[in-house]
Length: 116
Image 1 (tube, one colour):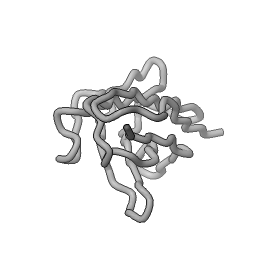
Image 2: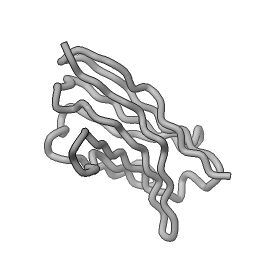
Image 3: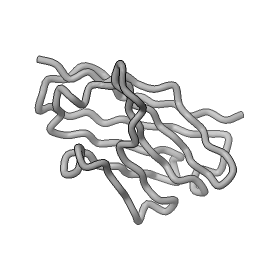
């Protein structure tokens, strides 16, 4: 049974940091590209960051470059999103996605709210 579970969201002040985790089970984690998406109210889901199967390659949307860092630990079947210098516009539900050749799996999302 496949599980993808995000954690680590919460309320943070502008300029603060959060670290999101994505724990996966039920599939061969190292065979999947891991991605973080976000969706703010009234907007489309946006790809924020992605990391290759072995972690050697990462990519980010321009708005988070230099502030966010995606990583993964294949031994722990877990992906991470370190978010620094958070801005109000980073407020959204953040979703973890495991993208394979044939299948893709989604978590339920974790709320990140940046507010003073």
